[in-house]
Image: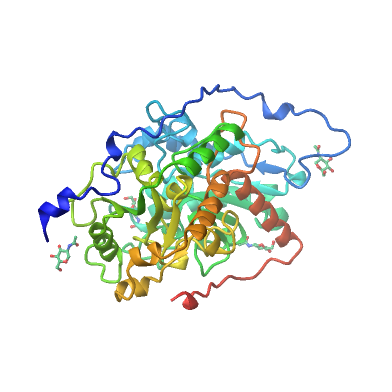
Length: 456
Ligand SMILES: *[C@@H]1O[C@H](CO)[C@@H](O)[C@H](O)[C@H]1NC(C)=O
Ligand SMILES: *[C@@H]1O[C@H](CO)[C@@H](O)[C@H](O)[C@H]1NC(C)=O
Ligand SMILES: *[C@@H]1O[C@H](CO)[C@@H](O)[C@H](O)[C@H]1NC(C)=O
Ligand SMILES: *[C@@H]1O[C@H](CO)[C@@H](O)[C@H](O)[C@H]1NC(C)=O
């Protein structure tokens, strides 16, 4: 390797750190929203018809107590910072509507958005679905690491079920109209056995919870009671205007890098393609690489990894963003990339195509590129060659599709008027209501098994 030559060649993103492309020029007014419950009377059409949600009033041990004791939520992360601002976290400096949002904060965000939902009802017989604001993700995270035995890990889930079963709303349909939001991956709630050495709790395996719909940031392709919804991103727009302005900005931004990867290697995981992706990106002058610390320690960690502004800059400057699976199929990064108008490149169908049916288009070719993981592992393809070979008009069409999806992928700031078009929350509620409707009519599919052999 000729180091001198290498250093003299300017990588596509070398000027990033001094480029300020993130400043929003518009002055925003926060509109402390008028109370959603005082919607004007409409004698003829009930605009909430078919959309009413009843929210259980859970004892605080199932939700707000966890926030009060936020220092117990994680051994590694100070979750107290991230529970602020109704769960979207501390604001980024000088960047209105951008927050340091933790990827595991959907329990809180969803609950707070639901408190402001304009079609809440206190009459459960009018409700299309019944929301259980249990912070299942925060609950399990307290016990995933350390020597907590299975009875400790399962206790809040079992306690919740006992509470729910005493309620008249439960008996009505055996919980089949109930849903909850667990802002972690499904595998944290599907412990294989009752041995202490196995991972997670058994929330999703409880017979009562099998009757419910559970929204998670990564669902199981082999079960039918959980549904994938987007990871929270850093962007929480207040109005339609702000989203449209952001979309416009992402259409205009100059993308000097053909592709980008922000992530860590998976040392000793021989099936992982992370190493190959890092290597191919690191070799290419057209790739923006931000190498993060993996299980090999902090050796090559870039200081960019945990800086939302920096990560977003890299994505905004790139045409394609690589999203190889990590410890599980999905990544928060895929949503950050799409919000930046960067076309995601997936290597496994489990990373998006079989996950987010309520939010992403059924035809994945419209908004993403698929490169088979096996081909990368066997070194049958070069990522740069594949991406560089895509026609400009196809690239533009995909990017436009991705930019068009941005409103659907963000959780709008609940403290203001909100986005007129549906945001990730609205689509999730709609998805649940439709699902419960199918269950009521007795036409819900019994199971879901995703075939993905044809992808490889
Ligand atoms: C609740 O809704 C049901 C069905 O619409 C209705 O029959 C009932 O009178 C309502 N109960 C109250 C207390 O408003
Ligand atoms: C599990 O751990 C808790 C707390 O340390 C303890 O009180 C309990 O006896 C343990 N249960 C079993 C079955 O070991
Ligand atoms: C699940 O729902 C069915 C139908 O409503 C009900 O009969 C059954 O008891 C429920 N299961 C549990 C474990 O509550
Ligand atoms: C990887 O495996 C080697 C050899 O078994 C071991 O020495 C090393 O600690 C492992 N590294 C990690 C990060 O697990």
